Length: 109
Length: 163
Image (tube, rainbow over all chains, first blue to last red; front, side, top):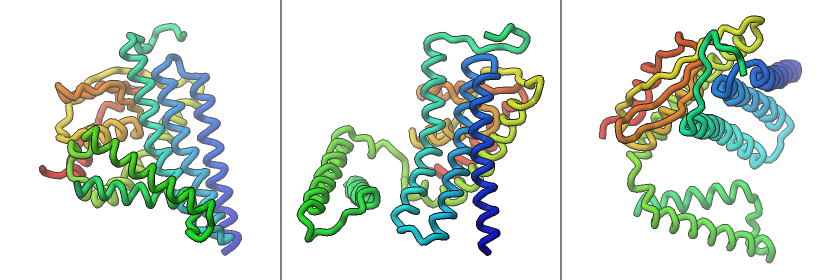
């Protein structure tokens, strides 16, 4: 049982690290503002979700106070709500100020 | 009025959860609890003055529907992440962005907000502007094959229910 929990935690941690790294690479590689928002807004969400999942497993396993568990769950909920709202706010700000999205075939900026 | 009482109780519970100091006999903790009570009351009062809660649709139904909707959305989030990650790591990223408009039929502003957020969380799409008058959402998609938002639309509409 312990080995299973260990492996599950490691998979979640590695997955979280992978998606967070992917988000960073995506911000560097994508051609313009909007596509970069896709990379930053989405992959971070799953990254944080996986990290919190790993911590949740460890907290339950080592009998941390239920308050810590509750806070972790709240953190997951807030990140899931905050991330798309932030992406939307940034995207809307760019759109209303007239930033034109990059089209395929144009040189990258 | 009922909604404001519910909001007050929820805020109190939330505050207690984050604070964790609930020992009435301890002077300092008692002070903190009174402060929490006061700030929850103040927040409820402000929300009441703004009149924000009365404009929303039926909230109870939303919470029940969320039990089905959230797991489905989680699955969409995972798919979305894999999709974007694949594009990021490919040597020659396959992106062909388009901006398009999609109309929506949600009645409440909460429904529209859930729809816009879900669009952002699902594969390759990002909501960039909502026109609440014309009931249209401007969407930026990473690839023109990501233009299908009907599945989300129908699910959020079912979540909102008939009013």
